[in-house]
Image (cartoon, rainbow, N blue to C red):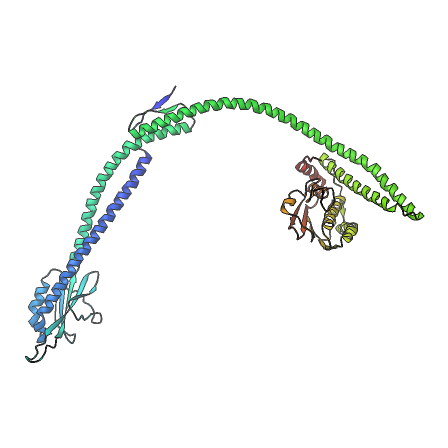
Length: 530
């Protein structure tokens, strides 16, 4: 059953916000218009008053000629009183040519300018200073020189100055009244505009509020919500679009429910298939690892016999002086040992993946392990004319670790550095503290590119994996080293630039304990395709 909500006319917060915004805007515009109008009016009135003051000052100067000729203020007393009869004029003063006052009249105790601040103008009346309370005017008083009949005119003679003070009360009253009147008119007009605006907003926003309430109901999950198409044209269009959208959503939900049921059945089927495939893959991986461990062990026995018999045969032929087949036997012995190293690596990797690699934790001397590694790697260093340098920073305590795996890590990294370095230097830095064992193997060899660094720890992978590569090897050394580090709770990383050597860093938290072996196996128990 569809529920249809009427478009009721209710006051909304959106309405109030719009009304508040428009109210603030209209009031702001009214204030700006009032202030602007008052300012323009005041400027016009000021101009008129200043013009009036200049005219009064100029008239007083013209009427003060006789008083200055006779240096007697009584002759200008009537002119001064006439000037003071203007409402805005507060004080008049007449100065002679020596800047001495000969007449001073005022309505009230209006302070004048100090003598130092008076500007003795020379040409016409002028406003010499304006203060917040008054204007100060000054005008020169001239008399035309009376030349002899036969002599040319010699110009005017300066007799003195007149000084007039005119207050600003009239200007202030006009400014105040203009501002108040403008504000009143603006507020009245703003009230009318706000009333009209409120009516228009009510007509538009109340139906929109109803639609908003319906949309909120739809957002909360109600599906059968439809608006009544009623009201202004704009609102009816929105209501019709909303109803169309709700119908589309209802149809979409129906299809989604059907599709969801279908997907659930397919996911359930695929999940059972994936579980079966996973179990089969785990079983195959376990059988593969066990097969590799068993077959590698079976291959080592006859291969060791071949190596042993070849050694005995070489010694016998050397004792008897038969050198004809010694070179062939040496090649057989070299290839057999190379094959044995491949089988040993495969066996070690298979044991790790099969979960049969155990840690033999014991207290060992770090100096002894390093010395053994140096002695073992010395022939390979000498073969490529490399120099090995060892730097040890140790606290002197015994190291509790699997000595065999630590030695294998050192030999793998040192042999790798010696193989890829010619006529260079290999540095082995070892730092031993109570909480960490850190080993850096740095060489000056050919280096490793960023692309190669992403695969060198994978089994049977080398930086140069082509059949024409220049360096031989199985690609298991770094992979086994990586697994040994993880087995003891540590890690290995490489920093290298092609052509500038490489630095392998091994970090092993101390002390190493067999309790962490199970967790390490689970963390590193991945299947590798051999």
